[in-house]
Every structure is written in C-alpha cells, then in structure tokens.
Length: 120
Image (cartoon, rainbow, N blue to C red; front, side, top):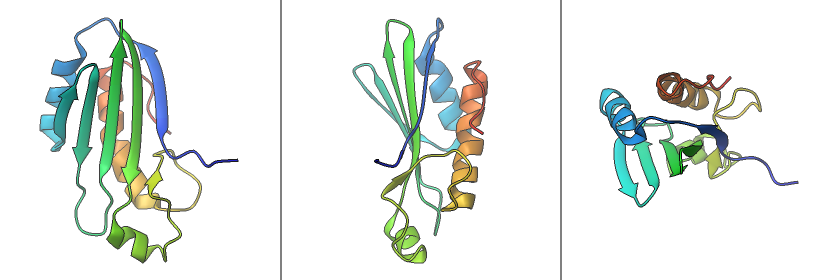
C-alpha cells in the first residue's frame, strides 16, 4: 500500500476563490501562481524547514485542495534520508512533526477563511 503524501480536501465554494487565496498568501508570505483553473501556492519555510505547497483546483464551484511539505535536501539529510520526498500535513506518523505543524497552522488559516474545518 502506498503511503499518503498529500493532505486532500474537497468542498463546494460559491465565492470568488482567487482574491481570498491571494490575501491569505500575502499575509503569510506565500508565492501564488495561477494556471488555468489551478492556484499554486508555495512558501519556503527557512533553513531546515521544508517548503509548504498548496494546490487549489476549481471546477464549477467544486474545490480540490491539496497541501503538503516538499521535503528539501537539508531536511532529508537531517532525517537520515527516512523522510519521503513529499509529506502530508496531518499530525501523527512520527516524521517531520514540527514542519507539519508549521504547515498545518498556515493552511488552517486559509481553510478557516473558506469555511472549512482545520487539518488535525
């Protein structure tokens, strides 16, 4: 069985998504790129902390949100090469606990603005 590497949420959202995401990204220092119906957000977290990536895909008001850590080489080395290349943000599993918490805290602020429950 393949390990889950992304945190995924699907929900319906009636309002304009991009302005909300852009305001959230500006507040938290994320870089935003828009490609067709996808919004790609990335925040480098600093030395020894993996970047957080968020991908939102919108189709007729249905939103698919994926959030994950993109494990950088320094973090991979510090974990003795035991961390995966990408990692979900939910708590548990024992690896990259602090990085996932930092990422979760940031993504949960967006989920709150979208009226969605937080990542636990």
